[in-house]
Every structure is written in structure tokens, then in C-alpha cells.
Length: 209
Length: 254
Image: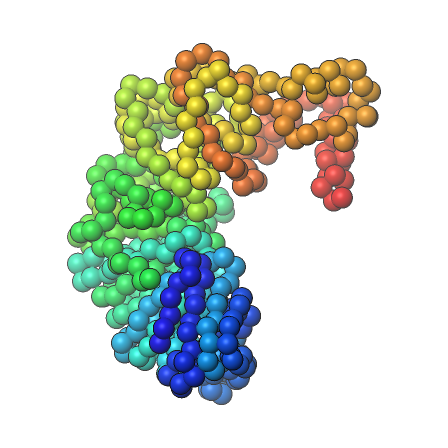
């Protein structure tokens, strides 16, 4: 699995023709390629199968992926977003479906319910999960991504508009600070925030959506 | 390729995040004024809480009233109170910290992120700018790195981030454009603009802060300020104003 960043915003994936180097990437994210490479719609539910497709239909977390196979190198980029590459070793990544740029072969995608997060920010009540062993590339459309570790003694609160995704055993809850709620209707956009407890890493971007 | 995770032990106490000029971390020890929408995350110390109270509903009314002298902007600011680390960001702009020592600095309202309680905030005479007076730290953003220049200088209004220690600027209009304005009929004006005829003119001693460009924001305060001024107008003036607004709308549609 040879992945590298050509620049902070362009991911290059080298394919050696073997099954192990094949990837799934966001539909339309290919900007250039060299060699003998095939692009094929990953099919129902972004390759997650019928069950995932059904859940996606219900939840609106539509995941549109393409299978990239063959021999050569592929350049991937979306909307000049910064690319964040994560290695998963049996952990679960939670992210918005449109934030997924590329997944290595063997990772499973599914849809999970995350709570009432979407009520204020317009983001989904559901999130896409990626689990298994392999690599995943996330997009940060608002500047260079920031990784923040959450430990048992160090809970973290995040603005939903800056949130990209998280990895690890994290419990997610709403902070509806009474004083913040007073701001509703005053164009603040920060009446709710997300609180993470447990242990893991949360990814945020410096520019709000 | 990957990003090193940060936690309260590795976060800076008062600095940009490592390798990231677009995000800034402040270690909260006392009250901090923060513009709403600029907080991206926070770690409350020891699992406690950091409260973000609107200025209209804060427990620190006396302190706020004496340090925040601007009714126009009071709805856009909150007071952060508690212990812990707060991360701030602003539209992907570069964020810098400034120290004032018995000084004053005026900064574009949209570019001011936060200031501590050692400073007093007042509205500048120039619309859309806020003045900070006193001793303390504040955070301001700029589109690209800040450029420091010394008067005498004329600057583009959109490139202006702020100024310190020098008199407030006057508006300067390009001489060629003025000649045309005075000589020509009003209607012939359209199409003669270069977009650079209006400038801010700085004189005296001090420092002017510039940014490389400005992504235009629809500033809600411009409208609020105008609304306040419209009340002073008579019926004839209002009708004239309606005409101007109509012409401007048509220009946008083209």
C-alpha cells in the first residue's frame, strides 16, 4: 500500500496490480492517473452491500465510491481540501460520508446512529463508520486538520461545524449550555457543541463550515 | 503524512498550534472575550466546564459593562470563563496574538477573535472597526500574513486590518477620479471606476496593519448601522435612497 501526499491537498496512490493495493475512492475524486488503471463504480452502498445501501437510503448518509484497480499511480483530490491519512488497526473511524476520500481494500463501511447531533448544525444524525485493518484518507475542506486526543481525564468539547471525524472508544454527547441556548436566534450558530469522553482522537478543522 | 494528536499536555499555552497558523490555542485562566463562531474546540481542565456566556446574560455584568463599550457588537461576543485550553479559528485566516502595553490599537471588527479583560473595547469612528485600549493580549486574524507599514501611506479599505498609535485615517479619493467626478455629469460616472479610487489615508506616526486580500463578508453590522441612520432621513431623502438601492441591486443582477 504505497500512499503519499503530493502536496497537503493531493493524495497519490500507487497500485501494483495486486489485490492488496486496490482502493475505493470518492466518486469523481480522480484528478490524474498514469498506467493501466480501471475505475469502476463500487456498486450498491459504496461497496458496503445491500444492507448498507438500505441504511444509507434511510439515513441520507449517501456514500458514493469507486473501485480503483490495476497497475499505476492515481492522483486524488476534492475541492482543494487538505488530506489526512489514518492507519486503522481494528479501530473504528466515524466521519461524514462526504469527508471520505479514499479507503484501502478490506475496510468495511457502514452507517451508525450518533445521536441528535444534527439538530443544530444541519449535519446528519447518522455518521459513516469505517472499520477493520487498513488505511483511510479523510478530507478537511477548511484548512489543515487538527488532531486532539481525548483521555479519561481530558474530555473535549468541539464545535459541530469544525468537527471532521473521530477514532477510538468515544462517547459522544451534546452540550446544551443554558447560557448558549440564549444565543439562539441571535445568529450565533454555536448553541450546541459536542462533548467527547473516553479515549481516542478527534479531528477538527480550523475553518468552520 | 498523518497528524500528531495534541492534548492538554502538549498544547501551547498561548500560541498557534504547531505548524498551523490558522488555529490558535489560549490557556484560559481568567475571563476572555470571544467573538461567537470562532471557538472550534476546548478542553475543560480536570473535567470541569468552561462557560461561554452571552454578554446579555453573564454573571460578570459589571466587568463586561466596563470593558465592552459597544452596544452594536454586544450580540456577537461571549465571555469565556473557567479553566482549560480553548482553540480558536477564523475562516482559515492566519491568526496572530498581539500585546498591548498601555496602548491602543484599532482592528477590523470581523478580524478580532478574542481579547482579555485587561483591555477595553470601544467602537472606532471608522465604521466596522473596533478599538482596544489598555494592557493585555488580543487575537486577530488576517487573510495571509500581516504586513506592517508606517505612515504616511494610503491603503485599500479591504486590505486594512488595523492601525496602532496613529490618528484615525481620512478617506482619500484618487485625484484623476475626483476631476472626472467634478467635471462629468453624474450619470456618466458608471464605467469610469477602477475599483481603487477610494483609499484610506494615514498620516502621523504609528503602524498600519495590512492583509494581502479580503474575502468579502456580508457584515451584518453595516446593515444595522445604516438602519439606525435611516431614521434621521426625511421622505424625499428616503425616496432617493430607495432609488440608489434599486440601481445597486440591478448592478448585482447583471
